[in-house]
Amino acid sequence: MTLNVTELKRGEILEIDGDPWQATEVASQTPSARGASLLVKAKVKNLRTGQTLAKTWRGGETVSTAEVDYRTAQFLYRQGDDFVFMDLASYEQTTLDGARVGEAAGYLLENVEVKTVLFRERVIALNLPLTVDLLVRDTAPAIKGATAQAQLKPATVETGIHVLVPSYIESGERIRVDTRDGRFVERAK
Image (cartoon, one colour):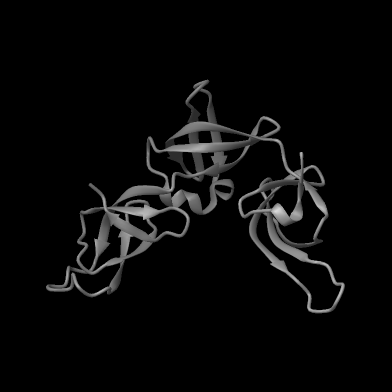
């Protein structure tokens, strides 16, 4: 399927030279010279190799979108640098290496449901849920009377990543974290 570059959005998966590339940043630019055409600039990441490129297209050009499939899977366990997932429809297990999982590793807990992105029947990427609940392993003690101020302090969660949390959060509490940017959302119920 083709797509006009002016309709390109962040997260869109394109097929360039037979490989799947995901747009990580997209910006439109109108040059000031008269008669100059709109430019669409994008940063794209190769989902097979991890390579990133900056691409520029003129307004009106078209790009090919990649034929990808999305399947629901469950994260089972980590073995060394490998992550094992189970397709919830077929019960097939898929192993992805740490390089392919990337930063998503900091949000993966056993039994978390994710969407796997398949290109030509091979898993090439993961789509995480918008938020995950994680246990705070270590943070500075709560500061008395600090609920009114928006002061943040670092906290280490069970997966090993660091999250900035409000000063009233204590070690041992569960927090909800946004998987897109690693920000604290709220205390988990």
